[in-house]
Length: 310
Image (cartoon, rainbow, N blue to C red):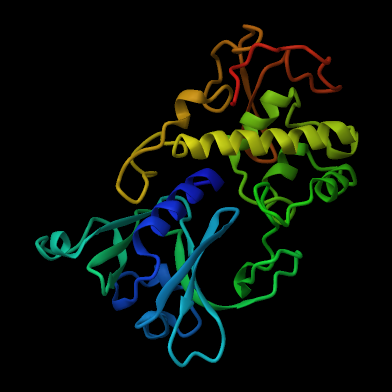
């Protein structure tokens, strides 16, 4: 599933291509892509037609367009969740019109007045799009958010994010800290890739319970997650196959910077010990048995030779 860096990369690509554009026509092919829309595909097309994209926003793994729709009684947003395999392509209308049919697994297409085409492609159909009203952010953020996202906590790169509050919630929990990292109601945007990367760089084993972590470990883990994801954004996200590409169809390159995820059985880049793989909270977890001791904090200054993030 695309995580925060991949969604941010796509959001930036959309901002560069379609802000200010008005939707001329909406086409939908697969009902699962609009399954969360109240009123179904027909309402989705009606609400989106003639709307103008005024801003692109993101929280965690969700992105949305703020919409300017003539005659609307409330502010609306087009919410996009990529699910496991969702992709968004921006292309030229001339190229699309020259192609018979549609892209493989293309389920929604937006034709814009300026000539661009936005295609939502989703092989596994776990992603979705919906048009919903926006409301004041219940988490205290300065920007209104879609009503359907009020249960999603701020992510580590947001102004509304408060590390101390997250640390306090973790330390009150019996759950493994990796489960806390993946809990989108506590901190959003982090999936298995960036959880393993952050835990390894902090020297924290994912199976340690939140209540057993020191405050400084929690805050260090969140700060490291911020740095890891900023680095991933600068490299266009993480691509392992063709299921994640940016709006131009280009892959991300952060896979070359991974120190833990997907490297089980390989040497730790910090100490040389073989990385191991276990299961924590139902998810695979790659860790170093030396650099990430399960029962106590890593010694300060240990494992200093991991590649730098900046």
